[in-house]
Image (cartoon, rainbow over all chains, first blue to last red; front, top):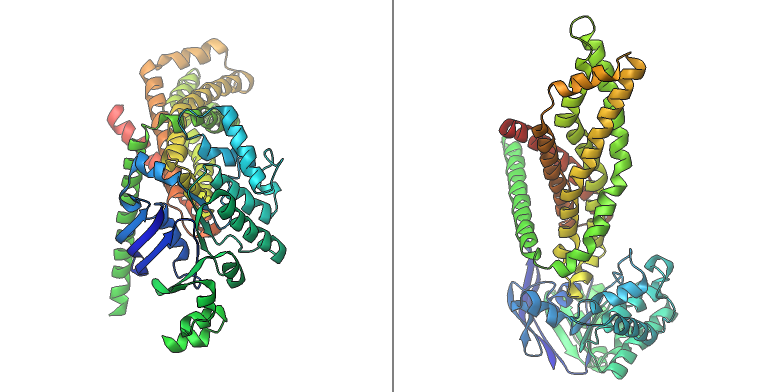
Amino acid sequence: MSIRLVDVHKSFGEKAILKGFSLTVEEGETVSVIGGSGQGKSTLLKHINGLLRPDQGEVWVDDLRIDELEGEALYEARRRVGYVFQFAALFDSMTIGENVAMGLRRIPGIETSEIEERVAMSLSRVDLEGVEDQYPSELSGGMRKRAGVARAIALEPAYLLYDEPTTGLDPVTLSMVDDLILRMRDSLGVTSVVITHDMQSAYRISDRIAMLYDGQVRAVGSPEEIQNSEDPVVRGFIEGRPELIEASS
Amino acid sequence: MNILRAPLAWLGRLTLSLVATVGRGASLAGDAVSSLRQVEIWGPLLLPQMVSIGVASIPLALFIAAFTGVVLAIQASYTFVGTVPLYFVGALVGKTIILELGPVLTGLALSGRVGASTASEIATMRVTEQIDALESLAYDPVAYLVIPRVIAGTLMFPIIISFAIATGIGAGWLTSIWLLDLATPQFVRGLRLFFDSYDVQFALFKAATFGTTVTSVGAFFGYTCSGGARGVGRATTRAVVVSSMILLVLDAFWAATLL
């Protein structure tokens, strides 16, 4: 049970975003991927559940090569990989209950009562009981993020991908989302990849941190190893000192 | 030298952009054909889309048709007085509304209403990652967003346009008896003079192709949108402009090939 990205290359037009990115995430681990804006962190995450395909390289989830799957086989694989979007990406024409039920409705033969039960349980896991009938626009930013997590975990995935889950949140809500990520790992045993800019959050929730720089993994290690890294690019990023990064390039 | 190069560069960019758009359109059309199999996804969404595209468009279509009928009757009477028997007002109103103004004016109005809403809804979902979310939840987004809208448009445009045709002729008749001192039997005599049931079949077929065009073009520009709120605006504008243009070209094409 692992996620493996092997020598992944991806370009949009002439702009190369990933230039041989390789990373393995082991079962039960939470790995945060840090890096500057526009470095391709979200692009990387979208490769893991097949929303994007690499120009070159391999993407493995367990024993499935995601970048080669098509149709129903890809959908089946996606059910095992929950995705929490940066701004939740809730369907704004649906209630929260309908949002959380969306993925469940694609399970062949599932009963309506089971869908309702799993929606309620998923919302309860993120402390959002009783909001089934509300629309996304009626919720606060933090509640929407949690509803996004509830939608992702409703399918009981083995993996959770979080795209900047704490962006735009106040410190208290941010801490709640961090707790939620830890709780998902501890209670559901999911393997997680978290894209984040927030170093405090990364130190708190991660078993390992990988830094994406210039399309590749610049450094990977435990939070302590990253904190104590001598690499000027890593230091420049975590200390917010662009002159260190510029001097090294 | 730069003066010569600039127009050539512009022409080159335009050609590349057109080729890329046609390529993306063909790719989406291919995806749509293969997504037709996923009836379990688009089937439940068809009726709500038919209501949204069809039923909700009827007031606008009837409003346009009614005033078109009024104007046609008055203008026909103005043109015919002293030269052509006045019962020809019925012939002109009927023939023009069935063959041309009913389908085309309604189609153009709906390219604004339906085309714009299709493009903006799908484009907003694209830029807010809702389409990615659909995919991540194991939904084929083309089956979910494009297919039900295109089928609903294709089915509902003929219905809306047949109501519009009836309303336009009705308005022309009322105008004739209230404002032009024409008796109902005279109006009906004119109406029946050149009536051919093939005209109605032609109008309904044309309406179905307009429905396919407006919804497909709206879905295409929405689905391929990028670039935030500005991209949504651009996609919506392009959907209305391009679908209106295609609609007029189609109108001429069907007239040349089927009449």
